[in-house]
Length: 412
Image (tube, rainbow, N blue to C red; front, side, top):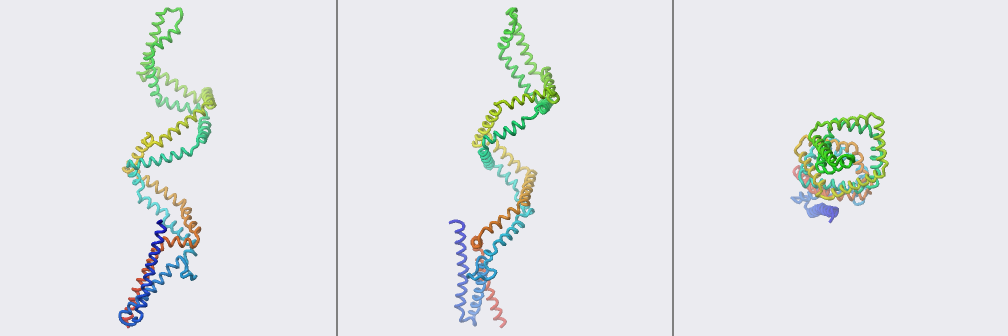
């Protein structure tokens, strides 16, 4: 049985109770009518009479909300069917004024302690995993919606053609000058020196063979081997010195070369023209779009595999980050206040900007209902409680009639 069927059954039951009390009062009134002017039967008869009046009056009041009592078109009855549009507008104004007011919303959001609750939930592993799963679902949906041709067109037109198709010289020169000034390239030089030394250590025969191949034909063979051996030792020693000494003259020479090159890229038209020519050759090369397509395909496949696999490194790291953020949110009250302030501002902005559009849904929905349909819907939801008015009217009417009759007897 659905919710509406349950409400309908409860409404019928309460109507039977209220009507049964009216019928009971009528039976008592009829049964005590012969002795209404004498003894205790007079009190009972008067109470029953007053109970009937109260029951009928409240039945009329409740019924008049939803329909014309007994089908009689009495003025100011069937209020809901005939005035549903006005009621909808009044309800719209009431909700907008008392529920969607900015100060009310701010107070409710502030009392809710949203950031702390979210932090507690995220600090638990299950909550962090659930949040990560939802993020993964959103990412998967975004990847599904994003068509390859559209993405490639955007990458080609926005990134490759507009971002890369700009003068490379000055910005590259400024970037290179900053790198050299900060010494950011030194670690790369260290790696190159290490590899050079390791390669020379493992390829002595290659160096010696290169020297022998370029030796004059008229020199003795033993002399060529001595020279080749000496050249190898010197090269290995030089590589070891560059590797061990951060202030080696070769390193300083490289710094000077890079500094000069950075200056030329920023100020020398010839160097700038060469940089732009290299850019044009790169952009016009047919393999550039192929490389972009392959890069996107690889990135997309990697992301799809990562978001679909709960045990992937991306999902695990995201879960760890989310849980860590939740723990910080629980412990850091200043962060809580800041985020709660953002939530209050966001809620207040939504209310002040879109309140009229939101509450309009009420009046527009009511307007779409026909009068009888609106009456049935509202009666189904509140009619059960309204039957208590009839019950109370029967009981209170009987008590009031009894009190009045008692006072009349005492005075008389």
